[in-house]
Image 1 (cartoon, rainbow, N blue to C red):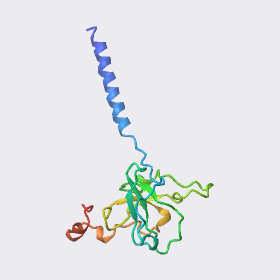
Image 2: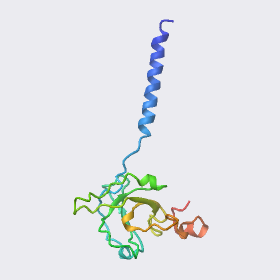
Image 3: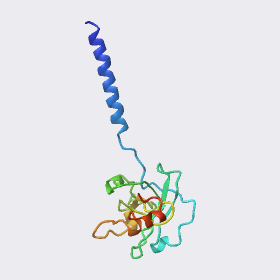
Image 4: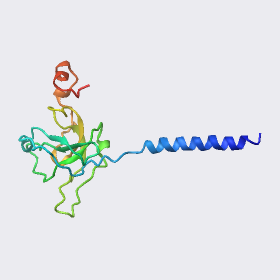
Length: 164
């Protein structure tokens, strides 16, 4: 019986260790959304007209996704550079994005925060929801609806590998 307390202590310690590992593993990883990154390709000619985003591999981004979002045709020039992004399912996933230091006139990071929306409807990133800098977009009354070409239909699935 006198060995019971020692064994109980070991089991209790093991339990605490397991709980600590689970809680530590569940903590949020910083995806560095909003960190400046360099595109290795030229921005799509449609980018300034609002047609498509330019998305490329960004080694400085934990997600490896660097994006210069499309500017919507009636949106003013935001003077924002290409930034790291990541996949998302809601705006909450983008809430900790790095923002511009307004006291530094040379800082070209995002000013207004990030929204989770489909960034483009063609190419390798078609219909993927990514954290997009709000400097580039205008929110419609219904939020950021999924484009029709990203709806789960057989025809759309044939044109975009990212549609479930």
